Image (cartoon, rainbow, N blue to C red; front, top):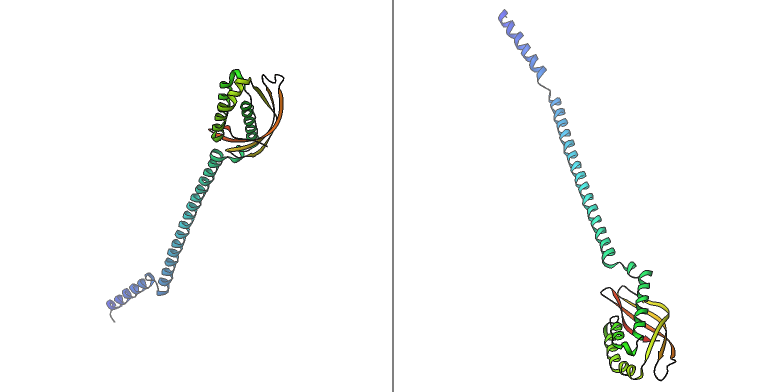
Length: 214
């Protein structure tokens, strides 16, 4: 072998050695591929978990908003629409009793000198069929008798109790003392009676809708 040939062999050996150092083995390539796949899988799983956390957070926020809106609507309806506790509490009961007492006194108190005024005032505190009955009765029965016999009556409530109460209706039991004078009996006649008064709320005001002796 010549010197030139020896040089070629040496170059070839160097080249082979360089290739051997640079090119990875099959096992190393497989390991790198597996690492890349694992990293990719880890990133995908992390992305999925991240999306799940975001969706879960959004879902909880939406649920919270829905619950707040529901509670708010319920509270609004309770406090501004119905409010049964405020419509039937002790103060509401007192208002109903006072209204029944005052209207009953107005109903049973009149004088021959002021009949029209007295009856007109009483009728503003009545409603429904009872208003119609009272109007007919005072015009046809009470007015002629009061004018002819100079009948004068005055009434006072001595005791009152609430029997039933709802936001739009009430029933009150009244004990009434009534004194009646006339030309025939100027000293007056005294009578005590008990009456069950039915009340109906009209435009926020209590009015008598029934008046029944008991």
